[in-house]
Length: 104
Image (cartoon, rainbow, N blue to C red; front, side):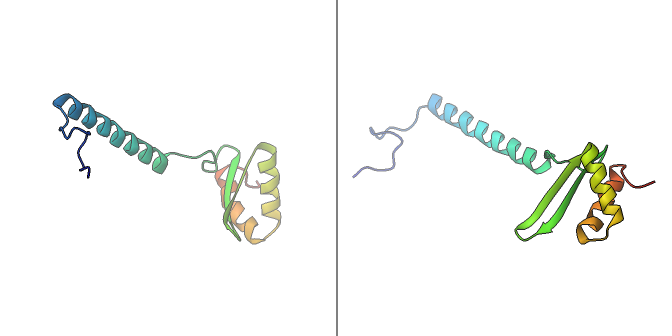
């Protein structure tokens, strides 16, 4: 029966192999940490509403739906949001204000 030795001959790793293994594990830990921090703090494609673009998260049957519009499409959506009073319109209005697209 084979034991849990690092190699078939039952020899331990030499110092160079141990150092190489430690460096590889260290690099892997740093890489996982960097990716974790980036994914937790990084902004996605749909950033906050500003500069003529709006992002609205509305409830839907499968969780939440993201509405993201810029330019003329955002202006039209904001015009509609301020002229109607559905739940989505009420959610859209504050985002339109943040984007500078509120009616004057």
